[in-house]
Amino acid sequence: KQEVTQIPAALSVPEGENLVLNCSFTDSAIYNLQWFRQDPGKGLTSLLLIQSSQREQTSGRLNASLDKSSGRSTLYIAASQPGDSATYLCAARPLISSGSARQLTFGSGTQLTVLP
Amino acid sequence: DGGITQSPKYLFRKEGQNVTLSCEQNLNHDAMYWYRQDPGQGLRLIYYSQIVNDFQKGDIAEGYSVSREKKESFPLTVTSAQKNPTAFYLCASTLAGGPTDTQYFGPGTRLTVL
Image (cartoon, rainbow over all chains, first blue to last red; front, side, top):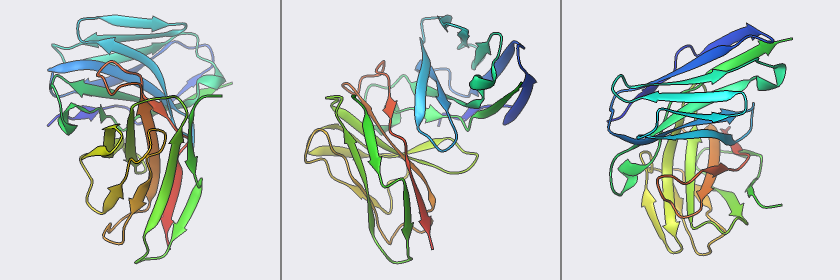
């Protein structure tokens, strides 16, 4: 069964710093990997989706990379801002054709605080 | 504005009671999902539905029930059989339930058992 781990659970950085959030998964047979943002007490917002055939995806100051062979994905945030403070979750979708096992497996998230 | 609404935002339940959480979407999406989130943990799938009048159990379906009578609505009932229901519940939808579809989430319902 797929397990997705995000370490550290919490991270504080000063404003303007570039930072990397980590996501590791145990089963490399994935269809894609997604990164989400969650503000306190709110739902999730999709940030980036990387297909298994891709190495990275970029959106603005965000860049997500995927290395299936090592079971790792990273989310790079450039020039961090206080508004980036939130919990960031990654989720892996398995390479299975159908059924509940095809659904996303989520990590527990990294709570990011960007200090002004 | 298109989106997903969940109600109520906060819900309190006495032990032994059934409660129903509402989820409505006006995105014209076929697939809808219910997740449970506990503090410091990731989301776990309760039920999902890829088409009206059909739904499938997720990883933690015991003690929950759903219905999908309309495309835009996917209510979740937390029954008295669910032994530890206090959690944050999130509803989501995708266009067709395909593996590359983006999941859109509602704002969540926080359920507390008194």
